[in-house]
Image (cartoon, rainbow, N blue to C red; front, side, top):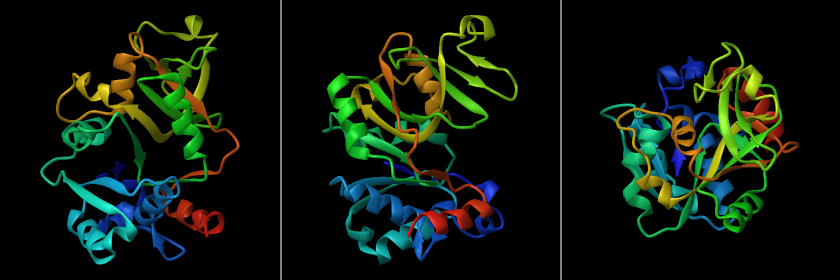
Length: 239
């Protein structure tokens, strides 16, 4: 599933008239690039959620025949549901699967998806989160075994879950989330939140009772294409 429903406010003025997922990098949209990225490991069936200028994404998919993949649309034009709410609405799509990839449309990377999927399969984790050691305003916190234990907002000092603080997290490793994850379909039955919510909070709800692991891809190219200047940078990094 590719998450493409966001408003893309940081990418104005482009997103005043277009969805962020259709921002172009060297002649290809972010959406096309991620669909082709998934094709490299044999994934050719993709669900894309839409909200902001949804009709433009539908038209792009239709006119390109899904860029060679079978693309299904999850329509969220009535309300923005965020990453968790969007996945919960789309849970029906994964009914016959044991696991699936969930990625953000505005992330471009060369991280090894095969290795990410292999780690997830070999460990039996409920979810495996692509993370790296890099500067960020928000971090997931992992123990020495790579198991998710919490989250911190570096700017505000906020921790989740609330029992965490500076004194009891010294042993934990802070790593930035890359917006790519492999999820066991069992997680879909464990999501207790309703409406609009983030996958970050889903993972924090479940990490005390289920194994949610880090896949560290530090050193791989990763770009959050969220601002106009990052589009220009993307053009120099991705052909």
